[in-house]
Image (cartoon, rainbow, N blue to C red; front, side, top):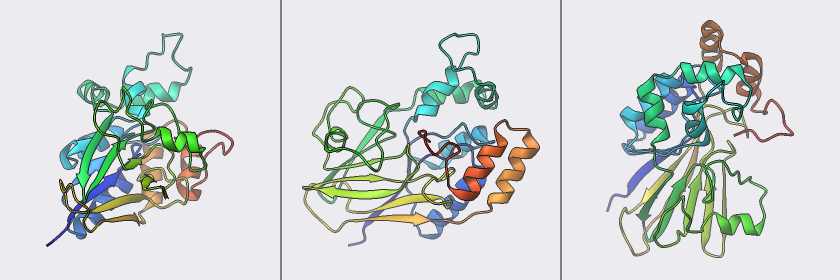
Length: 255
């Protein structure tokens, strides 16, 4: 029996060149179902185009932390961070796109080969709470919890997320936590990453199953040229991240 396959992407961050390279690879593999774990916008120059493309090709679009705060960024609000770049990225989006981003669901559940899989952007507690590759046992357990963000339902046996731009898989006592990596701003190595899940959809009993991380090279310099032509703020640190895969401030949180 042929297995079902789903591509999981995340953290495109306005990098349309990287997104198109990944979408081309997904199509070449014959995968026609794509789910997006958020952060379409911010950091890169073409958030608007990325939103339109993801609305076109992704059957599930989850809200990321940038998608949550950027559409409502108000420079006159004393609670908003004082960063003119945020205004540039916000205004690059159309009003309908801002509305679409902030109304995306925060999580999505599916059943594949007997595995209850939950997908969200950052953590089960909040879209703004970060869980790193090096985490505690308590943080690992918390990713599988049923919370207000995830909604009711049985606890998952697998959780996939984005946010940290660092792809990995960890299995502990029958539960698997995996990060899909970043398409547009990878910070583990400077090559876009996504995940393919392979198994039998909606099957409650164990069946063949696979999880694969895929790396897709792309024309980094072409995307940097687009950002420069657009006059995008924070071009220098963005360029450095794309070329090296090292966060602009390695002591701080990247996502």
